[in-house]
Image (tube, rainbow, N blue to C red; front, top):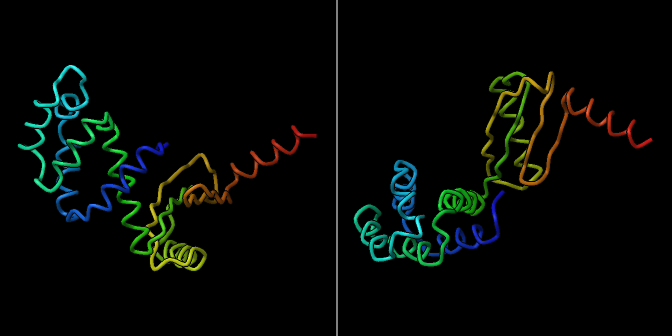
Length: 168
């Protein structure tokens, strides 16, 4: 779950027009060092020390943003901020994001049909479709686009039938 403060921070980062390569580099630095994350999130480490580390390790175009996240206590959300930032980038490019959970991995032709359907349904230029195998579905698929879910699986049908029977 992404919090509103995370979304707001991602919007700020996006509005700064920092080169994408610098944002990617900062994300890599952040993700590759547990010690760095621990130090920047630790309240016992002073802001001066955090700022010095930030100046040494992150691209200069990102340091002000990282320092602000430290100062306002949002640095622990940085991984989620990067995820929300990527979503904003995709949205700006007219790309709809979706996850397709399926019992068996679809062939390329079927995956392409899902992409085209998503573009038409959501008025997008393209679709970023993540495909994940989920044997618990038994047969069929479950497509998740934002907060909307389309469940056309045997497991989903059983769940719907169970709900219907319980409500009687």
